[in-house]
Image (cartoon, rainbow, N blue to C red; front, top):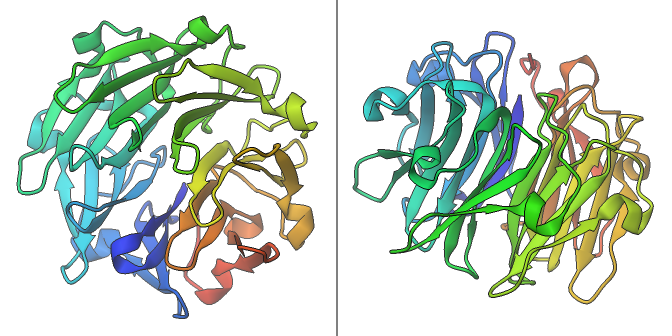
Length: 368
């Protein structure tokens, strides 16, 4: 498992992954610096990860921290976190909040700017969506969103949570047992609301019969919109989106740009690139190559075979991860390559895509 993310407070980019001993490893670099590697499991003496665990990494602006969240072998949610000048620490969020045990691989984490909080969401053994959250100086709390909203039961592999600054809301989306996309959302001082996006848009059913992510979501700064991306049962990539006060719409991106069919191995990722004022969708095709779909405001969607453009090796397994790096104004994609290598693809404004084998920077790198 692997996850890449930006840490604006540290002006660094990070790649977190599990090694062959189920230790959480982090590689990080500042602009113009050299990559560094840390065995976070060893540094913090935290529990080893389950070999099924998803890794989640994200910044928290209000706390000026970065955190990596995972499931341990007892199905507890563990958080590793650090500030600019503090040591890495770990917190057993399940034990701290007495939350239900996690089931499957449906795990996500994000910051909510309007609420100044950080959030972790997951699916428990009863197929309920659980939310953990904390504010600066506060105590972690847990809420059963399924019980609270009466939402349909979730399947156990696909969930996403993210901030929508334009709408002032936080949202959690998941695939239910019918293949419907369900969104739960709330504003500050508001009440949680539930929307069956598949029903209101009459969109194709989601593909939820695999462990690699079939669902991703993000907010787009330039467009003021929020987006959910998923793979349907015909291996097409679908986008659902809405603006403030608008109605949800759906578009088949595969059909719109004539893009290759998606592969169930590798998953998909999507993100905002503020420096380029574009939104990106990245996925793995049937030939295990990385495809990027991108668009700017008042523009048409474009498709780029990033593997062909860079000569990078094919994707070996998933999931892939994509993010914008604010310090360097670049966008990045990281994925597992041949022989358990870590591959990075990146590009800046007006530049060409480039590829780097991060494994070559350290002889100890080894993915499970």
